[in-house]
Image (tube, rainbow, N blue to C red; front, side, top):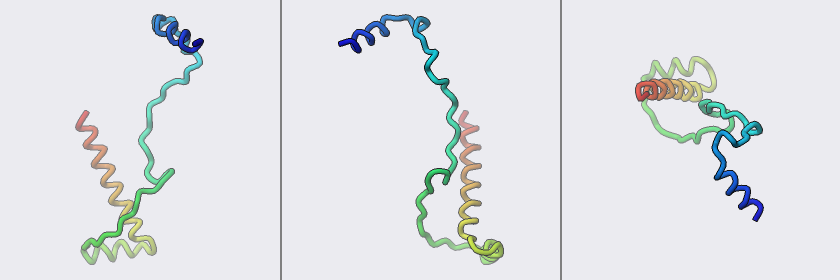
Length: 88
């Protein structure tokens, strides 16, 4: 009953009469960082790449598939960012 009365009283108040001093400031949401708290699901595929490209990727040692994934993700994020800028 008391809560209903408080809600009714708040509804009747003008916005500038409501004390919001204890309310935290709203901050802009920053873009999510892929892999910070979780990792995207990996999916095994077959892809045909030029032999010299595979040799270049492998020349960096172990983890060439991870490096290729990071390169493609970077390109994808760059294109998505450019598309968002064009939209407004």
